[in-house]
Image (cartoon, rainbow, N blue to C red; front, top):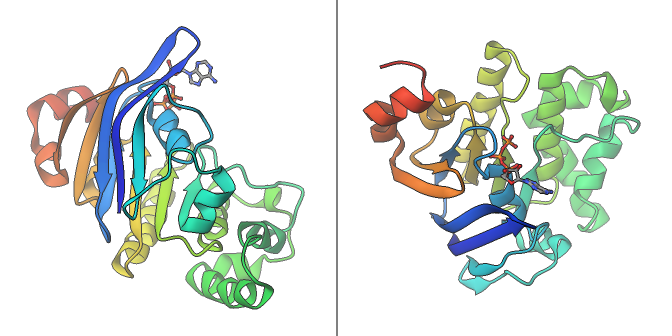
Length: 234
Ligand code: ATP
């Protein structure tokens, strides 16, 4: 469904990504792990064409999309849940969700709202509250709900566990699991390697802007090098 080939991205003198190739098949849940500054956010922002690339291509559903605008990426079915959630704090929960559906016809937005609030009942319960009043976990649910409003085919998730307590992280991942089981394709990037690999089918390890390992998520979880560097145990 999504294929990134030999991607190179630099910020001035900083080479953030070097020869990165990643693919995600339809219906797959893929996690890419890496430590702080490895280039995870850069990869997702590059797929969305928020940051430009030096070299490399990106195919979505077989079509070259490396020159498509970010808004058109959303229309084509790619939605990003950004790092730090970035909800619109001074807008209500409902308005945040409506923003996610701004490219869709009004009738569809209504149906999507119903679907999203069924999936995340708390967003329905708190529809008229300011998003900034929600807890971190609820804001993460809202950020996911907002992305779902654009009826994506693939969800790009940037560090969903960031700043959340372990129980809340689990709740978020359980929701992602339900979404994946309903057929949504997911590409997720995380520092929290253990949970990201636990829920994924396949994984990649990004280090200093390069993919150094890839394989089945269960195999990566059992790999000694991954354990030593990312899971905090021998
Ligand atoms: P984090 O989890 O901390 O967000 P990351 O793996 O997502 O880390 P990136 O944010 O993609 O990493 O950053 C990759 C590299 O590019 C880092 O060295 C970072 O300092 C650098 N970088 C990121 N954004 C910019 C920018 N706008 N200008 C200059 N350098 C940048």
